[in-house]
Amino acid sequence: MTIIVFLVIVIASVITIIYITNPKETLLISKLGSIETGGDTCDVEVVDGIAYVSDMQANALKIINVSDPSNPVLLSSYGVSGNHQLLVSDEIVYITDHNRGLVLLNVSNTSQPIFISRYNDPGEIDDLYIVNDTAYIIDQVDGLEIVNISDPTHLTKLGSFNYGSVGHHVDVFVRDNIAYLTDAENGLYVVDVSDPTDIVELSYYEESGMMWMDVSNDFLYIPNQKSVLLFSIETPESPKLLRNVKIGANPSVITIKGEIACVSTSDAGIKVLDLSNPRYPKVIGSFYDEGLSLGSYIVNDYIYVADKSGGLEILQMTSQI
Image (cartoon, rainbow, N blue to C red; front, top):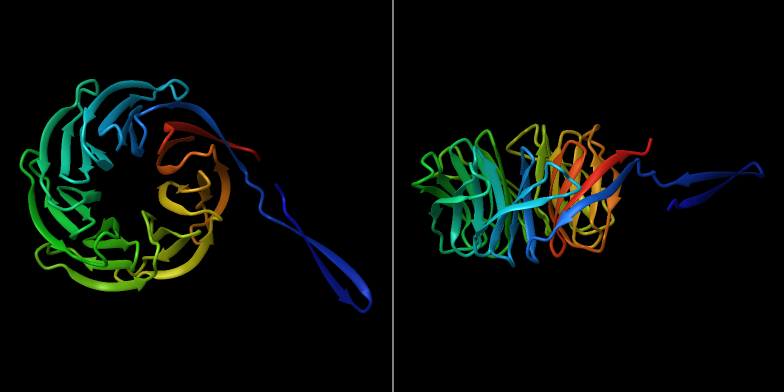
C-alpha cells in the first residue's frame, strides 16, 4: 500500500502541491516450504543444507534436510528440555537448556546426534556466543558467564559478570575481548572480558526494551520496541547511537548476512532491511502469515524462520526492481 501525503505550499498566490510517498518495498518475499517442529520453535541455524532447529514445546533439537527448500525433510530429533538458542560449529551443536545449562551434541551424523557433554548451571541459560575456544553465555539470573570449551568433553567456568536486572538479561556479542550485553529493562552494557576472572565495565547506555542484537562491520543493531537502534562501535568501548530505525512493529531479534538484515517481530512477521549503506538502513521487504517469528537465518536468497507456532518456514527473496 502506498501512502500519499499532499503538501501544499503557497508562494505569491501560486499554489504548489508536492506528492510525498512512502518508500516502496523492492523485495518480494514468498513462502517456499515449511515443516512442523513441535509447537514452540525458538531458533534456527543452517549449515550445508541442514537446518538445526530448537523447539521448546517438543523439548528437542530438530535436524532437517533443507537442500530442497520447497520440501524440508526431518532427519532426526534429540531431546533437550527447555532449549532456547543454538550455535553450530565444527559438527557440534551448542544448545542452551534453559533450566539445566549448556548442552553439546556431536552432529557429524545428522541422522543420529550424540551427546558430548553438559555445562551444568543452576540459573536460566538463555543465549550464547562463541569465540574460538570460549563460550559466552547469558544466564537470566547470573548475567554473563564465560566457559572454556577447548575440550568439548570437559567444560569449565572461567568467570562471570552480573549486570542489569535479574530475569532481564538477553543477549551477548563479543569482539576483540569486548562484550556487548543487552538487558531488556536497563539497556546496553559494554565490558572488557580480556581477563575472565576480572571483567571490567567500560560503558553503559540506558534504554529499556533492548533485545537480541547483531553486528555488521563497525555497526551494532539492536531491536528496541518499535524500532532498531543503530550504534557505531568504531570506538569499541564506547558505542555511539547514530539513529533509530523505525520498523513499525515490535522487533525482538535481528539477523544479519552481508548487506541484508532480517528482523523478527512479535506482531508483524519479519522485516528485511537493506544495509548496503549501513548508516542508513531501510526496510525493503516484509512477510507476515499471522505467525510469531522468534529467529531467522539467512543463506543466499533464502530466509529460514523459526515461527513459534508454525515450525520452520523457508522464505525466498526476489528482487522486484
